[in-house]
Structures are given as structure tokens and as C-alpha cells.
Length: 193
Image (cartoon, rainbow, N blue to C red):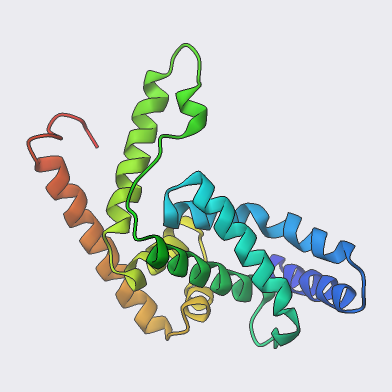
């Protein structure tokens, strides 16, 4: 059995245990996927607190609707679809493009300059990613950052693999244009971003 098949079988086992009344199975599923969901939420929102809220809302939705999981796709894909929709709904409600400086960098010691430069680059890219249309942002995030396969991304986005390729290609092209235009602007020259 390969890694995906093993993950699929383990997820189904935990879901069945949960549906059978084993409350600890929920904790196992949350522990297994919490970091991945939080990472996705952070890439989409760019905000630590929003990411925590989105992660919590995602798992609440997952376990409120677990009986509706049809096993046509993997639990992982189903979870990502819920997480992505929760992120997009959160962003629409918030309508806010502000970015926070990472708290760990703000309180870091000694040699903070390299970390600050790295965080600014990450913030700049996250800010640029936010300028993409939702479908392009979703395709780029799932493929480039979350490393989902083309098929998994298509399942999460509820579209064909060809549509994912188009959204990803157009998103990357637009992202390069945004980054290039920002790098060429007078306020950013010489920053090497």
C-alpha cells in the first residue's frame, strides 16, 4: 500500500470509530490534519488569529457534517475543500487586506534582520497572492504551497483537471506580473524581493 492508500484507510478507520461513538477518534483526526489546515488558512488569510479561527471553524464544520462524507474522494481532499471554502467565506466577510508582522519575529532576539527580511518577502508574496482572483489564488495555494496533486486540487475546487491547470497557469503568470511591477516601482527598487 502506498502512502495515500494508507492515509485513506487510516482516515476511514478513524471516521468509522468516531461514528461508532469513539470520541478520541476525533482528536486523532484533528491532530493529524490541524497543522495542514492551519497552514492553508494562514496562506489564504495572512493573519495568525484569522487562521486560528478558520482552522477551528473548519473542524467544527467537518465533524458537524461527517455523516455526509460519501467516501468518493479521500477524507483529506474533503477536508481541504471545506477548509478552502471556509477561508474564502472568511475573506469575503472580512474584506480586509491587512498583514500582521509575525509575532515570533517581533519578539526575536539579536540577529533579527535576516528574519525580518524573510518575513517581509513572505508578507509581500502573501499580499500579492491576495490580489489574484479567488480561483487562481486557490489553485496556486493548493498546488504550490500545499503540494496537492492535480487530481486532488480538482476535487477540492470541484472542477476539471484542465481548469485547475488553467487557473494555476494564469495565477502564476499574474503573480509574476504583480511581483515584477512591485519590484520595478520606485519604493521597492533595490530591495531584492
